[in-house]
Image 1 (cartoon, chains in turn green, brown):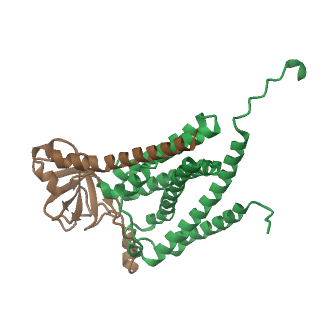
Image 2 (tube, rainbow over the protein chains, first blue to last red; image 1 turned 180 degrees about the vertical axis):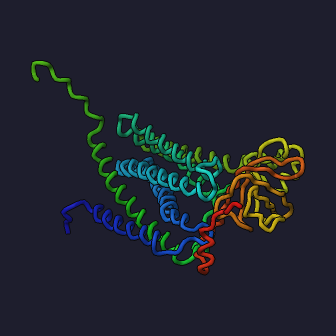
Image 3 (tube, each protein chain N blue to C red; image 1 turned 90 degrees about the vertical axis):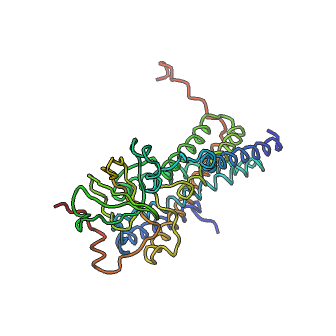
Length: 230
Length: 154
């Protein structure tokens, strides 16, 4: 069956509907957290964006390895998409985390292990995207940014395990048994919704990357118009 | 670029990344084992702060541990708020001139910034609360109201 539109839009629509439902569910249909009260509801955005940021950056790592091993340009398109979607999710993660930190820790930001490593992770991947933008040649850009992405991947386990490696004020990872059922449900619905949203973005961004590759170098700027032609 | 060159680059990058990861994770612990002092700690426990002696009194440091109620029955209802921060072995009295966040309560983890004075009281103006990794719904209406409690000043 041939769809009259790109397949990812179907996922996008489902993602938006599920995300709206997940947010309404998290904001109005589950009880507040016993200790933090209503403030803890921001976790229904904060935690899904964290999980998905790690997931998407892991995709970037796999694609970088995949490109260097196989040389297939599809890996580079996916890498480009994953880098930018991952950055978007990380920015969302840091913003919601900062808003969450003010009422719970009494500060907007603290240079403690989890926050510091997350900020380093964000800046590292921004660096890889900047690197991509300064290399003109397709193959060279793919090779360089793949290597850079593999190096940048150091920040993933470092950020994820920072709360265990170092003393931190950030809470450590939780397990399903430590979350009461209604709250757990809200975490999961929103995590799935953000995953679908990320998939939608990745697919859209992949297509742009594929077009860019075909175009090769950016086309030269048009000549300025001569006065007699105006 | 030839395929073998790309492969070499992939393994080179993986090796550098793995080495960097190991170094970052273990260098401070290793330094701690050799020099007896870990540098990368976000806060000190009461035991560590007391063991540090004079060194612990000179600088502004962070102290972390569990909250134990102060001696005053109204300990969490007025400023400056006085309570103990304890670990398994030691406890230190903390006096804070800043109001703590609303989820501050007995038994919760806190990190406070300030100085240990000559009387052995840790003076601070900032109490940061560390939440556990458990997320629970309130048991009843009373606990629900408590979840929204704020510090009331007399």
